[in-house]
Image 1 (tube, helix red, strand yellow):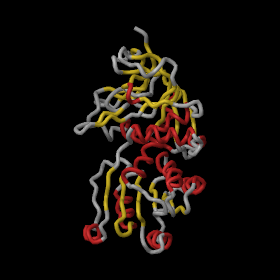
Image 2: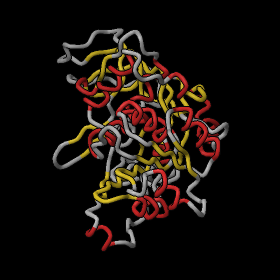
Image 3: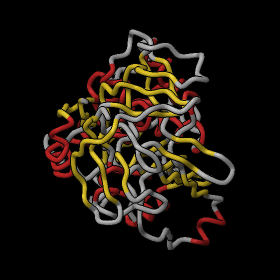
Image 4: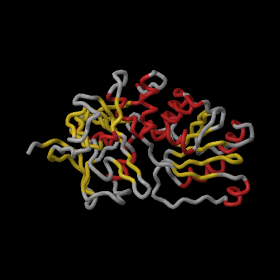
Length: 334
């Protein structure tokens, strides 16, 4: 049996560690990738902390942001070749279920990963493996939230709560869509500065006593057309809901383990506001981001804050949690 290194979580005990496990073999409809890089996401941290485990197997290799090289093909796979560069779209959805790489089956915090052939998205030579690795979630999730769920239109006013990996890219993507104004909201000054550099028109501290008045001023008294929550907390939910104008949409992307509620039910009805949940992206959203990146419309070069060897995953996770150097995305190198 040939072994590989993988960072695995035992969901029943909470044990998270590097293990030597068998290199997986693809079934007839699957493809095996030699992992180049895999991203660390806040959702992974929730798993490690035991805050989210519903539907997960007793033990799983984490990692849902993955890019690599095709290494082995299932017997029925005809549209991929050994050596092809690809990333993995991590979400498979049906009418009754959702299956996610690194959550419901073994992910990319390993030297090799096996995934359904139809979940792979080809990379052109213009995109580096480092930036490709973060596209499946950190970039495609906000893109899908903006274009599909929120249906942001040019010149609509949009505010982004939480300028982490997803929120940072949301700013760039809103600029492409033509939202105006784009307002970044984060309690960390460095994050606000980064958002302005990425294309936000304004940046606000949500703790400021004049926050509501500032939103009113920046939207010419109309309130927000769209509020995007990429962090996930009851405080944000209420603040964002209150900042919406008539027919405004609040889109919840950040995962929260609390009950959602807003203390403004009459306002919800009278002003025809909407509260929408958003999860992940579809394969076509990933393909759209790859196209934008290949054509030079979307620069992701500054999104990689640090790269750690897979063997140093504990240090990488600790630094991600501690926000050492205020990272956008941290990668594991397999």
